[in-house]
Image 1 (cartoon, rainbow, N blue to C red):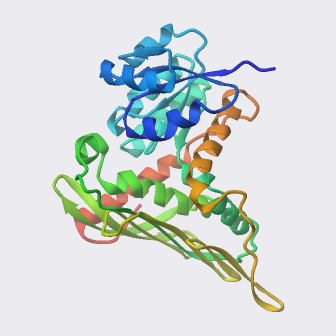
Image 2 (image 1 turned 90 degrees about the horizontal axis):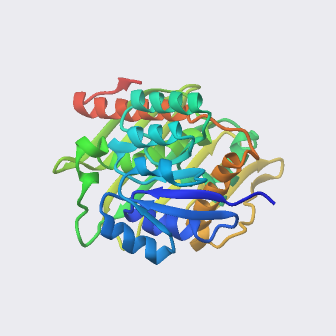
Image 3 (image 1 turned 90 degrees about the vertical axis):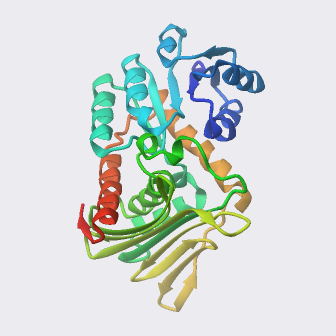
Length: 333
């Protein structure tokens, strides 16, 4: 039997506490060995809560952790390149929270570092691992929906009673606002659905609040005469978040909210929605587990390493969105 994969969590913020630590401590054949955060008291409290034996204040100390295999980077966006690159140079595989970095040039350097170190570098884009989105992607890839010429994704998060604060509201640290936070995931999902087709032009509009945008709408012209529409916000005036994906093809359509797949057959339009092996409420949790299972198969060498090169074009698209906002016009990517 293969030994347990030993994993450390770098950054003890919300995504580590709500997502990664609860999932990691329950995964089989995995050992959580360290929590790293400059705020030692906070890290110690969280480590005790999740049964993690080691608390460190700086990621450089990970070189002294015996048998460590991988890390998950849950730190502010502007630190991703430095931390992930250093960890790969230590011989560690890296899962990095989205976005991979704050610029396409930085992302390219990180990918080059992963290739040089022969380590897996993966971005935590859990929407790719939802059962409903994966089912739709299979319908698109197989050509069953015909030519998918229009795709729409929306990630609308409800307004919180206590306004969002911290580094995500600082353009210097985050690289932007909601486009860098939710937009990266929403755009990635649409491009992934289309086999990462190249975006040719974008037109973007945003609503600014303080230092960054809190809402954004983007229209993208994609190679092959296809169109992607994306809407994201932190300020939805509803009681809960609204996330959706919609794909329109020449022979059918598909959506996640509600989850439906419609195909044109000889007998007419027919619903061919496959059953899900999980309840709608469990889609997110299951997606994170599948994401980690995917990553760990590559850490263990059960599957070949995969390049994150698609993230370079993703960030080029986001950069073009910000240029479009600044210049108030459609721009080329």
